[in-house]
Structure formats: C-alpha cells, structure tokens
Amino acid sequence: MKKRKEKEEKILEKDIEEFLKEKETIRNIIGRIGGKATFANKAMNFFWLVAVIVTFIISIFMQNTPRLIMIEVGIFLISLKVVYYFHCQARVNHFQFWILSSIEWRINEIVKKLNDLTEESEEKE
Image (cartoon, rainbow, N blue to C red; front, side):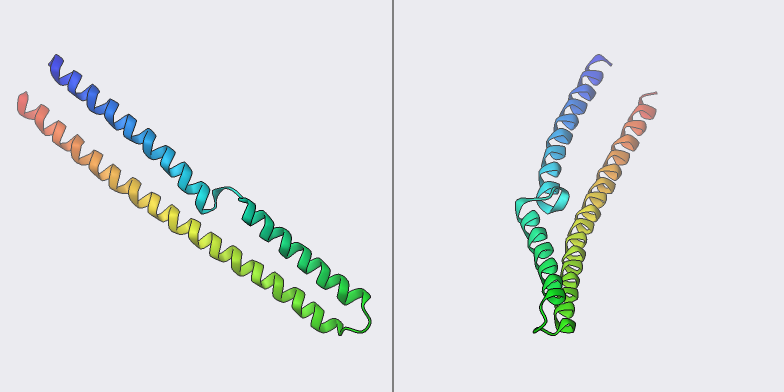
C-alpha cells in the first residue's frame, strides 16, 4: 500500500513537472504568435497611422490633387489594415484551437488512467 502511494506521488510529480514545462513552452509560443505586440507590429501600426493621416491631410490642404483619389487611397490603407487584423486573428484562433485539442487529448488520457486505477482498485478489493 505504501509503495503504491509512493509510486502515485512520483507519477504526479512527473506530471506536474511536464505540465510546468508545457506551460512555459505555450507562453513562449503565444508571445510569438500574437499574444504580445512586437516591435514589428508597433512599427507597422505606426506606418499605417502616419500613411492614413498624411493621405487625409493631403486631400484636405492640397488643391492640385483630386480629393476623391486621396480619400480613396486612405480608405484603401484602412482596408489593408483590417485585412491584416483578420489575418492575425486567424492565426490566434488556429493556435487556440490547437491548444483546446491538446487539452481535450490530455483529459482523455487522464480519464483512461483514472478508469484503469479504479479497475485495479476494484480487483484488489
């Protein structure tokens, strides 16, 4: 009985260590995928903001350029930004799906182990 408890404790300790390693790995991956704003993302946001503002300022103050064309260019830039956001969100959604699938797989494995343990305990009784 005592050996069994020690064995179960060792298994639990090993599972906890694996969980902590997986947790750290997932944190790193989420940071790379889109969990945190990187310098490249900030630079791209700044570029889009400046481009849109400059386009609209040019359309207001410049009399020689057709205003409609400049406004269309500004709207096009905003549309590109929206498409970029959709792309980033799709990447995050794919990763979330992958995580949920992984969690489901782990839960199924735990349920199998639990069923095996209950069968063993019933056999011993």
